[in-house]
Image (cartoon, rainbow, N blue to C red; front, side):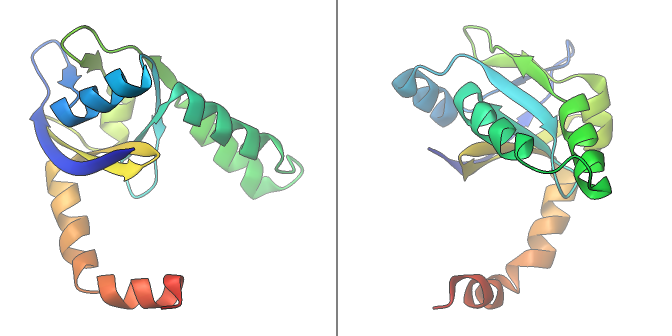
Length: 145
């Protein structure tokens, strides 16, 4: 559903704009609400409301008697906030999420199929540089091709 890599700056009011391609997807699928939370690798995860409910159900089935499960759920859900982009596709990212992801001014939004990830430009470049060389090896390991 969401694909591609886009650079956008955060404006003076703390708003980020959804890339035009993502807004087209939102229009096509009638998506008007997202959930943002702490992601992995120092990024912010952005889920559609439907996908958020799917993820929420998965986490509800995990045993809360396990310390790792409790810790993950606390970080994941305590960081969550809903966001409704305005008519221009702008939405506010809370400061605590920007701090978590080290986002100051320039952000990279990447489509990862069922979610959007929001990265600090420098952190994304470092991740990309460190991962691109092993892309084929990773594919071989996880895809069994």
